[in-house]
Image (cartoon, rainbow, N blue to C red; front, side):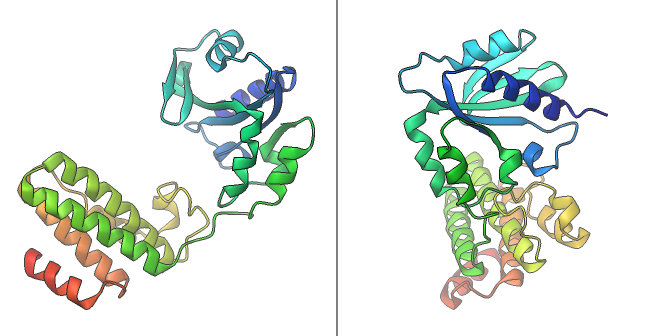
Length: 252
């Protein structure tokens, strides 16, 4: 069965190669990783010739007249097609190509990632990237957890429930990374939520689930923060003793 994101990636790739305004292009995410399923996105970077007039929204609407929505979102240009198939496009001037050299890892084979490379620059950058994003140290993740936990617990005590809920979400990301380190499931380090239920044992997912509040209320949030702290302590000993004592006095 054809996977919608794969078919869309091929359609956009063909159109991209035919457009001389586009100097280079790559696709990323589930499709080049070989992990795409019925719910996956199609995702692209286009590098546009410096003197070219290129409007990504116009380009997409001409190529895909069946589009339901084109929006300028925080992750570039977002297009939604029938069946709720999502396409993400970053179209930037070619002089921004060098910024890709700072990517932490390619996370897919170069030959599946590279869509167009008229002068060889993009291919050289991609081939010099690490094969995949390297996991961070347990200490670095633990320190980020402590930062988000303390920020969130303080605003919770102030009575800012929505802000506390948001901070807890960030703290739980750090817990997920700690769980991936504990269970040596670091292949998808850059996207830790992806396939978490498959790559982590059920008991790890259940422990993480206990850190989600049942409601955005003071009582539920306090219970979730307490469970989040206890899980972090069970996963790592990198929290300083003084901080642990203060927190444990607060959460009981």
